[in-house]
Image (cartoon, rainbow, N blue to C red):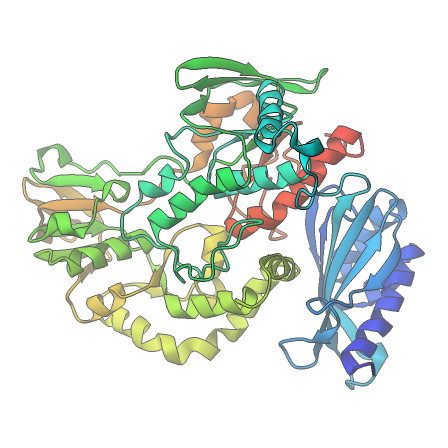
Length: 582
């Protein structure tokens, strides 16, 4: 086959890159990046998840870690998804590659950019390079089981039950929380042969979703929130409804052979023995008390704490109904009612739309702060560019993580104008109706807020149209002052009568929940809580060492735990072998 320009570009750059790394040439390696290029390293150079931006930081990082690293066996990928190919942006080439270290197999991905004439091979530099460990030698993931259980004796069920009984007695890993992150991490660890027990406080897996408002659907395409090893069926709805997701999570436990205790709570105050390198954790399982001694505890309790409802003066004299959005049972229960929805995030917008659709007498949204709004269709298009329906999820995940998060934010800001013609009528109409609408951090839209705040935005599926038509009213630029028997009074002296007030005000920070669970002493040792990005754009303490031995966090969205569970599992293996000192 005749080499393409992409093949020639990738091969020329890659040969130099491999030679520089194998010879420990820091200056040479750095020179192969654009001056504002990015290096994202997941465990290849260092037992951590890092992103370095610009020559100075890349050079400093390589100077620290390249002398103690040994790379060899570099090969460009040749399969259909990772072979050298033209990038989305003109004058770019993408390519995947593999490499080896003395203890592991590695994978990588690079995006190259032409800085001179396109056929000048020396003028191509890396805008981004992603390097990861893919598996430790001798500790690779299992594939699909091929044995027949020694002549089917024991049977498959008996073999599974024996593994489960051992894991219940001596779990190597205890995962707290059976939401999508906890379950995907558990599924990954099962394939890595790491005995794992998951504990879930609810009666059923998926109950956290079942308690949300009934019209809730995920605001990303199904390819983005598919589960590890188990993509949704081809006829699955494009936008996944609340109850279907809850039921899918519940059956995922069975289809992936996961050991999950429901109705089980970790009692406050687990302790860690630094000599034995084991935890002592007490679990209340439906009234029965168990003491476990795992080597590792992974907290996967989600990004949200307890529902937050502000205390308002005289709310005790209000004769109507006050509730948090978590307790909202659906618009049909409020037909003919005058309703105030406090909060203009996703939940507030969805609930206001549901109320209006079910003929509430009036619906007023009370806006506390500026909100970033974009049509859900545009967010879907952005996700489908990264997670197309005709590409395997694991391929899309690796490509997606090859782009550093902060670089993603830059690209979103740079390209926002391309969708403005389809956004401006909505945004300008909302502003004319009295809403404060912003463009997101640096004009990049909603997606950065998903990472940075997990709030402050809504992906519009129809609420905006009703606000513009004044079917739903907006009260903005004021604070709630107090309640009366049948109304709410605001700081500008205005008053709105109401039968129902729904606080779509989000949830408390998880920090207090974690302190109650783990103790102040343990919290004091960790670097930070895993509910935001660090200066490099990586989740603080997420899927990486926390500062306390044997304690890990699994935050983020579906795609985070779907891919980063691999790197968490490799670190657990490395710690147990002795490669990683915690």
